[in-house]
Length: 311
Image (cartoon, rainbow, N blue to C red):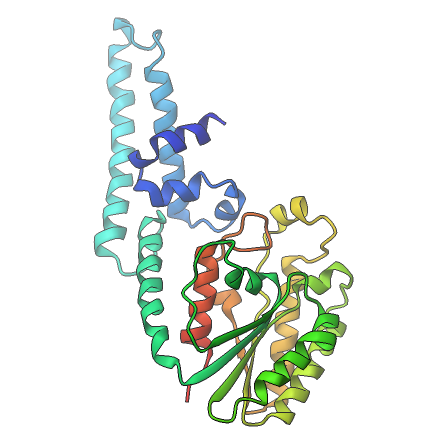
């Protein structure tokens, strides 16, 4: 608790608001699991500096007989902090790749997102229909902030959506959209599957249920391009707290994606593609299942700029 309060109060001291917001986030387990070696070093330096502050404030340590020890102690602290600052400077102003300490990566991804948000406007002649669950619904419900959504995008999304919802509701709505795609090139992105793990853990059966519908659509609408967007990660440690009945694990999700990708590859239809955002993006989630606004925008930008093949 002391560390979190200190972060919130004195966050600007170490690496600015961007890094501290990640370290002090209430979903700290996510960042611990995704830390690089230099990230860990930076966290250790911050912890040691905080510990040193507490020690230096101790009246017993500040006695005259401890002068030599004080000099040695402070020299070690300053040396570690100097290395820490050099890493930050290297990452921020020199390195073009990810080397740790999170600051540069966060700044870079922000700049990249801003660039992508501008680029997406050029693709208005192509219509994109996204079929998904709550992870897509929160992009359009306005409760999580404003998203930069291209004007040519349409959503068919529902919280808790499973295969049954696709069969009884979404497919009818989707076909209505597709029947109106006479003057535009239409693209359909499917992002469903995680909610099926509430009631089923038979991954091959789950994949087959979705795959048969996707294959049928691809054959029925050869002029439309369909995409399977990977079921994106959960945080295994956090999701159990908020969704105890969800049986999904990272292992199950990876198996779901791998099986679907193999089936699509074997089918070898020119209008049925795969988009692997699972391995391409970084994900931040407070409840282990749903993503924050920045992650949601990154997914949207990924679909726009790295998934859809425009014509």
